[in-house]
Length: 328
Image (cartoon, rainbow, N blue to C red):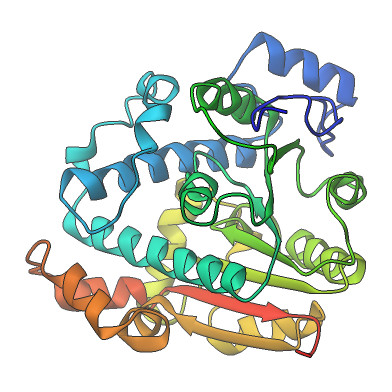
């Protein structure tokens, strides 16, 4: 079976939303308009995924040490947005995105090498993470990408160009805050098997209560659940300024409530993720996750004038990992 068969999941293109009258009408609108979304914040999330694509593409334009031959696959569907000009990003953004991607890559690599076999990307967007990991590990895992139908339909079409892949990649076209989401996910993967959930910049686009419900449902249904979260920790005066700008950009204000690492630790504990580690992205960069050699490679790519500003920004983002079980 092809890795990119859109029917691989056995789950249709409809998805539920608290703001839609029915899943059928939502699916119909989605098929008529590829940019259709059910509310303002889902629109913001989809725009953010395109912005992330541009920023990650710029890493290659500026020769950051990151092997990713798959990004060009998505250039056509992204080009109409005007967000594919990789020269328009700035050094602060580029270095930040590099650190973010390295932290995620290192975490997933460690999970697979440690025997993990199920990975779920929530809000996967135009991520190439599966393709890059498949290149290294081939068919040693099952991978599920979850996002809005309009985005995944375009992505599946692009990925049909890739040859020699197996059926280890599955798609779930759902709103992750929907009531049926976890039940649908359990139809695709085994809830008794060790599973890593990746959430990059997901929590900021949904109310904190919905985010908490999502994690509690995952930790309750998946017996060996691990999470890796990249998100905001809007601490200090600089964090307040960032919050104002994010809200103006359409980010849900109730998703920006955590103003300290301690708040993230408490959030993890309340979500039954008792074995957790939380750190700012600056801490992750300075040795929490990245090695000295990796930092030197990053620093050598381009000179950074505004080091202090970059460090303030990195202190307002965090990388959190946790699990709901004890290691054997």
